[in-house]
Image 1 (tube, one colour):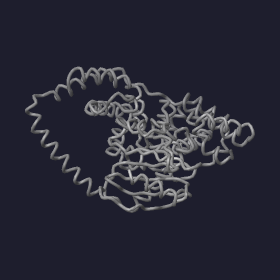
Image 2 (cartoon, rainbow over the protein chains, first blue to last red; image 1 turned 180 degrees about the vertical axis):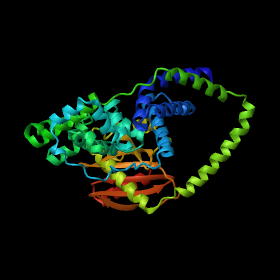
Image 3 (tube, each protein chain N blue to C red; image 1 turned 135 degrees about the horizontal axis):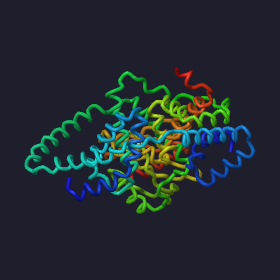
Image 4 (cartoon, rainbow over the protein chains, first blue to last red; image 1 turned 90 degrees about the vertical axis):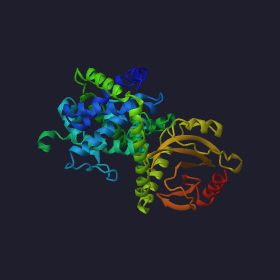
Length: 176
Length: 250
């Protein structure tokens, strides 16, 4: 790679380091692995950079981070079940949840974090991209290579699950 | 709007993904229906619990500079004398050809794959009708739509406007099917919307037009001149077949 090309890469792709790290941290579950995944992702990104022509760099980079995370998860977590919320399951009826208890839970960051970590990665990533990165369904669909309709249905199932988890007053005990 | 439709669209609503008309219909419904309005309130609460309660993890302070130096190293290795690289390039090309050959044998489509693909086609069709995403490029002009796909797809779909035959083209959209980006062309027949999905075929040989039905939608699919086509609509199969003949006549 020529120097000007590397400079262009650093200017376009490095500013999205925060988003890359946040996604990797949520998907791998710890700082050390998140850092490894981010480094590997950037090294892959720089190789593919020739094929990148001025679209938005953030979704492009996040797609690479996501794939690197999954390769990493497959290598390191063969034993973990990954599909406890499959696309075909019915949405849990959330009518019993009451807004006050959800609000109380929100005040406790730890509870929200645990609830998100309890989601399978395929659902967690969509919540992170939507709620923390503010990405559109279309951008998320591009990153995860799934139809826009699947983005919406996964988001619906993930939120129903989160609503239930956050309405339970003692999540920590329930999970223990 | 009835409650069932509102429930289906409620996530699109809180995420700002609906068009103006549907937004207003949703708001009107919330005014009239305490059950749906309660569901909406709970959903907003969950959403704000996540946005305010979930930590946004910041990278450790040294990571950016570590990355910069690793990128420089990688760039230097890559810029090695060209002769050394040549041999490896040939090895790379040979390997790529071999992998491509293997992939083709492995990915020859299983009938169950068609079933799954049909479900994805219907899901994409249904969502395209609901959200504000029927078209990315709203145009009745094939000469606007065709260039729009350039750079977004690694192939160039043939785009025809059959307004004269009662199938006006209303736009194009980028979608995902079969694990790849595909072109979606949107046609109308009276009040019916037809999504025509096009992408390069895995199996190059032409096939006859096959038909299936899923969730009340008619699907016609075929392969012609190296392209796979799926047409999805609530239009009756006989008229849908007319569009297929027009597309195949291009």
